[in-house]
Each structure stands twice: as C-alpha cells, then as structure tokens.
Image (cartoon, rainbow, N blue to C red; front, side, top):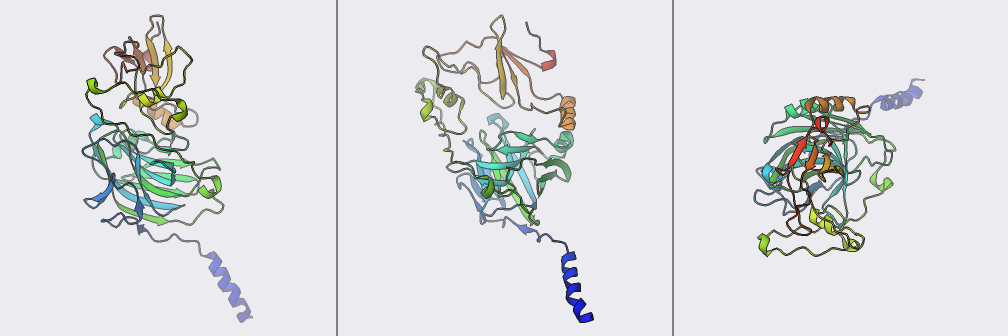
Length: 366
C-alpha cells in the first residue's frame, strides 16, 4: 500500500506548489544598447543611462527605444529623469508596455505609462485608441511624489488585464482592461516626445517576469498595426522673407500620421471658391480645441480639451480631484480671428493679447 500511495503523494505535492515568478533580470547592462533597438541618432547610452533626445535641437517626432523581446505579465522597475527647455515645447516621455512597432513609422502602438509635467501616472493608448484611458488614482499625490528634473523610481506591474504603477513608492495608476480585442503582450519601450529640446534618461531597468495569463489576447491573435508612413519632418525655417508660401497638397497625396498645422491645412479638400486659413495652432498648455463658434460681434470662441473628458460617473475620484484643482481647460475667445498677415498664413499661433482666456464657469456669451 505504501508503494502504491507514494506516486500519488508526489503528484499531489507537485500540484500544490504554485507557479512562481522568474527572478528579476536586468534589461539594461549600463553601457550598451544590447537587447534594445531604436534610431541611434536619437538614442544612445550616456552617463550610464539609456538616453533619448537632444540638448541642441528639437525632437522632430516621437522616437522609441524598444526591447527586442516581448513580455506579457511582469513587474518592471526603472529610474527615469526628464530634462529640457519648456520654452521649446512639451517635455514628455513615457514607458510603453505590451506594445509593438507601427510599420514604416517611428511610432509604437500600445499602452503608455506616461511621464512628464501634468502627465505623470496617466495611461495613454499610443497609436491605437489615441487617448488617455486612465487617470492617476490620486493625481495630487502622484504629482507631489515626482522629483522634477531628477531621478524618479517607476514601478509598473502588469498582471492579466490589470495594470498598476507607483512613482517613488506612491500609488499612481490602477487600470483594468475590459476590451477583449486589446493585446496583453508586447515590447517595452521608452519614448522621447516630439516638439522640444529635451532629454529622457532611464537606468536601473529590471523586470520580474510573471506567469502568463491563460487565453490572454495577443497581438498575433488580435492583429498587428497596419503600415503607416511617417509624416515628413518640416525643413528648418529660414527668414520669413526667404520662405515662399507652401504649395497646396492634394488630399490624395497627404501623408498619414501626425502632421504640422500647415500640413494639415494643405490637406483639406474644399468646394470651389473656398479657402482654408490657419488661425490658431496648438502650443504648450494651449490646444486640443473641441469646438468653434462665433458670436454676434464675429469673435471666434473655442474650448480646450487638455484634460477633458473625465467622466464624473465612471471616474468620480479623478473628476473630483480635477474639479478641486481647477483644471487647465479654458474657454478661449479670439477678438480678431481674420487678421491674417497673408492668405493661408497663421494669424495666431499662441494665446495673443487679444484673446481672453476665461474659465468655463465664468464665461459670458454676448
């Protein structure tokens, strides 16, 4: 009897031992880009850190340094530092997880655990749903935890459909995916955002791989991103007198992907006799316009959506925190929207002296 029970005992013991995570491994060796791939003009190793961006020129588009391996469930830890000149544009980065490259483009598609002023702790769906899909659990606490211009510890825990993050030990994100068509595997990458003279540096990158989720959707199952040629980088501007007006760009030849305001204007197809005029373009803290209307005095009204929408029912904590902080969105009024210096050229590219910024609750429509 004892000999017959022994195999059963050993089998029971084996089944009772839970699956254990693999030991944490370093993803960066501290001196090379081994295990990573990206554009070497914008990515390198400096001062013992993965370094992206430039201290002398604006980053023309988003660039990503990605792992050569894919991961599903994991506990990722790293240190990240963002520096740059805010006067030149948005100083922003983020950690892509469960992401893949967009063919023929510098973009990646997938979750981005964001990093940057007013963005720390948010979850952005890069080149897929193209919007913030989760706000920090406590935006004020997350912002207070950030060491601006210095090294910050970021921990990202991805387990099945749930993604959580911590900034310097403070809980930042807690999101659970509900869409079964969203892949839960992919590469990890670091972003340097376009538009500014800026640097992102990352070091001490370790990953503890966790047991996979049975039956989880993958990129191979749900489908990879379709090829999307990158928009051309605008040429360096010369003196205004030497810069001729840009030629019209037929919509059939417009390049897919992010475009400059002027490229966007030139891509419009208009009825005969109509012209499109660039009146205002986005700039730091001023943009994401969601409506346009005119009053009886022919002033142009719009509203920004830098933080909108936050659903007060589904995201009550985030909505309450945003309301308490006052928010960044404004009603914007342009007194002279037609004062363009030349046909097709921008009259306003930043908030002008003639534009009155009003908080939504105090705006008066005349």
